[in-house]
Length: 170
Image 1 (cartoon, rainbow, N blue to C red):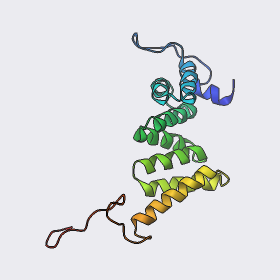
Image 2 (image 1 turned 135 degrees about the vertical axis):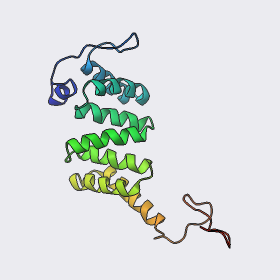
Image 3 (image 1 turned 60 degrees about the vertical axis):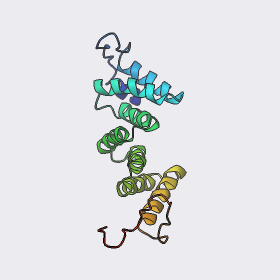
């Protein structure tokens, strides 16, 4: 068993399934493995259900939290994904993927300042990762566009708001 598997399994001990008739069978490691497999197969919402159960049982497992965050992000649960990526990054600030996940989740929520901060950290840790650099470039371009660096936004452009009419407060 690898270190990541031991960590996901709470150090190697199976936690018996708890709860009522709807509780999944097996222990935490089984839930983690099945959830990761569902995510790989393109079923993030189903994966999120199992991985949430595993994270409740083992809240300090970074591998469970990161996999849960990936499932949440893929399922469009950006706030939850951000919280889990943040927990992993705070537990290990050198985890470039957690920093990346925090950054892209923040961008999806419209917090581009936070996004740039964490994407820049991810790029600094893994400058060879093209997808990290692309996400950082896109987020910086969004911030620059919102600041007017490319000229005024034209009517109909995303983020455009019409100027106030004469005599009205803006």
